[in-house]
Image (cartoon, rainbow, N blue to C red):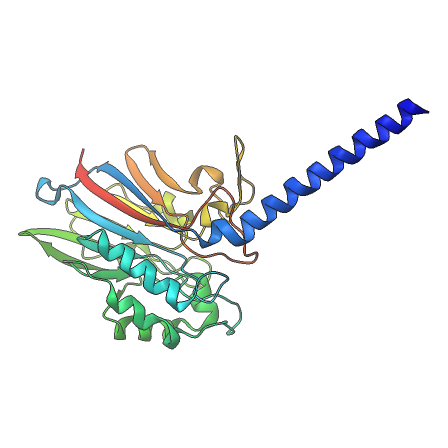
Length: 284
């Protein structure tokens, strides 16, 4: 009888301990980590890159989802200030500025996009739109971005003059809601040019031509939940967890995925804190 009581007590203690751990993990994943903001810095040596563009400092932001838990207009102001403190040469925004579905959003673009006009970069701010933007109203989001002085790209490219050198910035339409056309996006880009391609969804990576120096994407949120020693549980990409976030090099093609800022579907992040990426681009 005494043994049974001891066994029951031990099981009760273990169950209580597990419950406490689960509660702590829940609080951390919902209230703490999604409210963080980290600056990830990385030097990337890329192909087809002019030596005159070496050490170009690039700020990359994606998946702001303004209106989601923790991502208020005030938080966006803080994000913009943090980007400016890094003194980037150029800023790339990779889509999903709003949150919500089917024409409904918890915060309309006119309530927050003006904050993005505060981004300061020597050579400008360039963007593409994401699936949430088009599910809401892509043309409306584009209009407000352009009013904020941000160049919006969709299957086209622009030439940016930097210290007498040319950098081409190409942007693709969103894969889930539009028709991305790499041929059109690269139509005017010289094959030997230094070129960065922007897209929201990394599933277009395999189609990118070898002449592109670096491809940038968001969309995955890094999976939002990444288990230690296992990695992200669910990644919204056909390319799998290998492309969930960070730098990927395959056959001399260079891809980079940012895990972004906000959350989608569930307001949780675990092991994937919101990030601003600062990339130092050099010739390899």
